[in-house]
Length: 292
Image 1 (cartoon, rainbow, N blue to C red):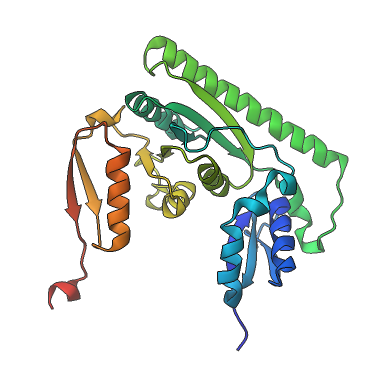
Image 2: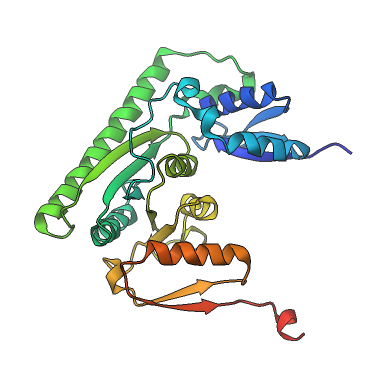
């Protein structure tokens, strides 16, 4: 019976090509597919797919950051101290992103930390050539499009920085050190990669308000980061009345009472040491379990 294909990662086309070469050098047959099969030009990244039987071997390779080193990718990594006391706030210039900044700055003030505002942008230029193989035409218009994207991203990030400065001046945000970082790629992948490389104290992300569809309440990027991050993640709803964690007095911890939950609970307590709150442990059981 032929192995089914599974998705190993969703990356930009350029990085997917790098990973494909690395995996194939290890004898792992690798395929690159568009995420959006109906509109393949849409800037949603590409899937790196492999046979299910090769998954354990492939995971050992991808869990190592060596394949995305500066020498391989050609990107200069920001020089931030490993394990330094920083709060990472991914931003996308939305209103709920600004809410995360408000919460994150106050949180960082309480734990005497610095803030890193991270924005990840995507350049969809290479996705257009995927159906035609590995060789693609690099046109002048592509260069212009990339420049336009970069100009827009820098403009938006400067505008956000100006808003933050204004709120610090008015006293709405505490006056603490913060830096802005730009990265190109798929948002969830780059947020996770940055966290792995720099080990921030916590990641604070905004989520949509109640006026959005239920399926969008958390958002796919935030949900993916929560699922895979080894750093604690706080998701802040857009319309939350809280401006800082000091206002939180009760926390619900959902648990199945397994070993992973104990590790997560320990991480929760360590991350929130400066704050005073009570924790309720909640276990959700199936109806059939309660009848046994």
